Image (cartoon, rainbow, N blue to C red; front, side, top):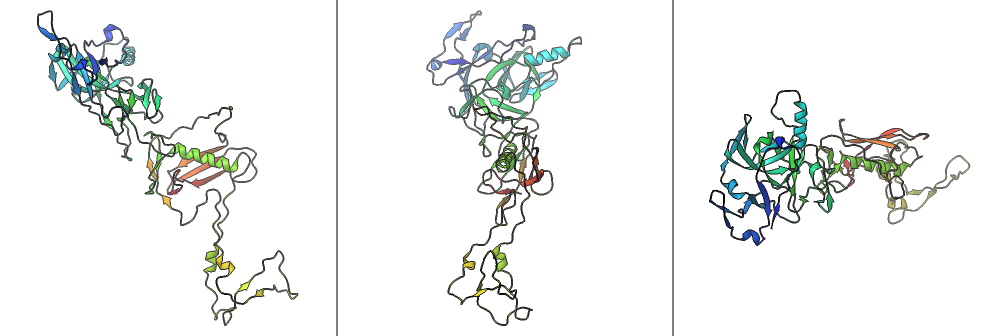
Length: 453
C-alpha cells in the first residue's frame, strides 16, 4: 500500500503559489499490490498510459553516523503521479533561474508562506523585486530535475528539517519529542527522506550544507550543517553520541571540556561542571557556614624520618649510637626537679618499634586543595562555542526548590587565563561572619574525578 509523502503546509493565495501538478507516494516494497503489473488506460489523445505508476528506489544521499531502530537505511521506494506526464519530461543536470545555476545533488533555499509574506512586506510600494533568502526559507537537496519547457521546470527533492519543525511523536532514542531539543545547535539542520516535487520558481538561492562528524572534536560549525537524520516512514531520529555524566548529546554551540585520561576520555558539559560545583559547595557550607581557606599541608612523618641524623663530628652528636627511646606522651610532662624532662630508656627489641609501624601522616584535604603528587591529572580540551545559560530553577513535588543553592553561590568556569582551568566561586549569602567571599578551585572530571590541567 502506498502512502502519500507529507506535504509541507502552504496556505498562501494561488497567485503566490508555484504550481506543481505532481505528487509523491511512498511505497512499501513488501506490499503485494505494489508488485502487480500496471494496467493500461487511454488518454484523451487515445494514447496508452499506465494507470499505476512505476515503483522507483531512491538511494539515500545521506549516511548519518547514528542508527535507526526500524530501518537500517533511509533508502526509499516511491511513485510519482501522474506517472506518464513525469516520465515524458526531459531530465536535466541543472537549471538556471534569475542568472543563478543550480545543479542536481545541490542544496537550495525554498520560499514558503512566511518568507513570501516577509518579502511582500519589504516590497510594498516598491517595484517588483526578485525574492531573496530569508531566515524562514526551507532548505532542500535536489535529487532530480525534469522539464517540458523553460516555463515548466520541476525538481524532485529531499527536505532538510529545521529542528523546530520536528513533528509530534518523533522518536528520539527512548522518548517521543516534538520540535527543537536542547542539543540542537543554532545552525543545525536534520536530513530526511521526506520526498517532494517542487516548481523551481520557488527556489530563492543556493545553500551550503555540510555534514558534521562528532568525532571531529576541533571542528566548529559556523555555517549550516547536519549530523542527525529523520526517517519519515517511522518518525524516528537517528541516534547521536552521548557525552558527560548526564549521558545526553552535546550542543555544538556550547562549551565542552574533555578528559584525556586513557580510561576515561569523556566530554563534559560546562553547565554540568558548574552545577556539580554548586551542589557540592552547598552540601559543604549550607546556608550559614563560612568558606575557610585551606590549612597548610603538614609535613608527612615519612619526610621527618628521612632527615639526615647528626654525625659524630657535629655539635650535640653522640660518639656512639644509642638505644632507641620511647617518649611518654602525657598531658603534663614529668619533671625531675632540675628542670629536665624524664625519658624512659629501653633495651632494643627485635622487630620494628611502634613508631616505625605507624602509617605516615596524610596531607589534609580541605576544600579544593590539591590531593598530592600521586594524584593523576587530565589535560584540558575545549570545544568552543557560546556559553550556556543558567539552569532554570525547578521545584519538587512539595513545591520546594530542587536547587536550594540558587541565589546563594555563583560559579563561573574560567579557561581564559594561563594555566589550568579553574572554577571561580562567589558567596552571595548575607550575614556570614568570617571566611572568604571569593575563591577558586580546580576543575575535576565528573566521571573519573581527576584534576583537569
